[in-house]
Image 1 (tube, one colour):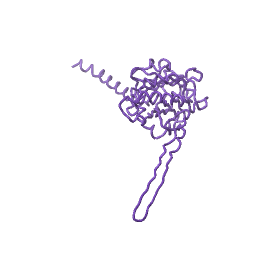
Image 2 (tube, one colour):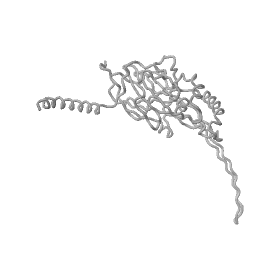
Image 3 (cartoon, one colour):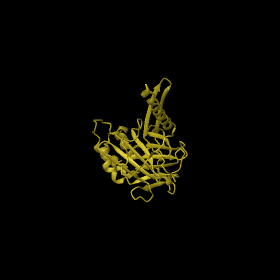
Image 4 (cartoon, one colour):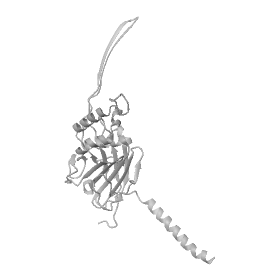
Length: 302
């Protein structure tokens, strides 16, 4: 009995300590992970623990956001073929609002590829993919999803050196070269056997942040839709792209009856597609992940 009596205080202390730690973790706001080593944007994810910390079913994305005292780092991964094609052709956008608001006023979109290159790639891959699944309707929207990610990557990879930027401190809205490291913003995309990875590196100062910033930061990660047939389709895109022309409809009708004969003539021409919006549209909502986290802190923050 004495042995049991001696053990009870220790058991109680252990249970109390574990409960207190669990409650403390639960009460803490969600936080970025701390980057133990700086991330090199190469799409390989060597600096990250894999699989990545979070997964979103709707967008088919695994993702994680980390930081150190200098940079914000974002890793994104997907095994979904259609999502991979959308990312390579239309880009993936990271939106940031340092006040924790839903409205995105700062964004980086990668990759940003010239429309003429995309057109040439689509034409080449579309012609070669016409018989992939036996579907005779090779001109319909489903044509995009028959593009093999490996084919798209092999033709577009040489043109993945630019990112679109919006609202970045010290930079005009437009495009930046992510291979020359002049702005501090780096990005890379890598397609492996069945997985596509994207890595982004953005200096905290370019987002208006300091290592000691303690407020909640709102992020959005959006897979931009590859709008092959005109119209708008991008979200938070640092830059715009012209849309296509709508369809043409033509019809003649003749009707007769006891009251006489009536004729009708009608023609309808679709409008020209506008420029793609930076603020997104309804189509991108299912492909957007919204996150609120504080910056991770090292043991000592200056």
